[in-house]
Length: 266
Ligand code: ATR
Image (tube, rainbow, N blue to C red; front, side, top):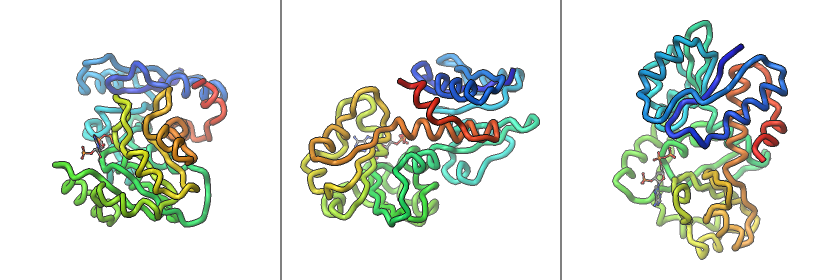
């Protein structure tokens, strides 16, 4: 039986095992997908075990997305650009790293070929995976609070996508111009706070879509504010499914049954 799974810390609440198991079953593949480490284990120990078990592939989540890179035998250009890997494929004993987070995100949005003006809030790991995979019809403006990280992010964005990072305070002036606003910060993950005040979202055209990368069972404060201002919203779940579906395709060279993956989450 082919072995797949997930490494990260914490991973106990991950939805990946149920999603990937549903996709394996739908495709009739003789494989299993499970959590591959305990909390507190060192990455070197985990890697040695996965090598010994000859796992066929695995997903990588926080805090190992960058730390896994020195253990790989090859890396895809998108993953190398953002220095983050969320999918590893074992090709005849060689571990190759990819990032499906960014492509998964853009594929989870309603499709349009029309030019889209998109405001992205945040410039950390999640934001950079989106930036590196940005489709041609998207005109992206990235905002971050003026923290100690601002200048580092600004340099990274210039190098990754030739973008000028904007201070978050500037969004008040700009917000009326956007078709989509995305929260790619960690605000709302461990608290019930919205990165933008409702009064700010009220300045966004009512036709605009408001997206939160934070995935929670209950609605995030950011999306609750967007609903209150009459905007259409999209949570982090579709992205979770799409990045998983793209990992599945990298491992099995066939499309995943997205409907079955979605159904496994309800
Ligand atoms: P992830 O991998 O989930 O993206 P990260 O790389 O730590 O996590 O990035 C978190 C993002 O949320 C950053 O853009 C961060 O901005 P700073 O680095 O300037 O803190 C942003 N963020 C975190 N807390 C925030 C807050 N209270 N208000 C606005 N942005 C915040």
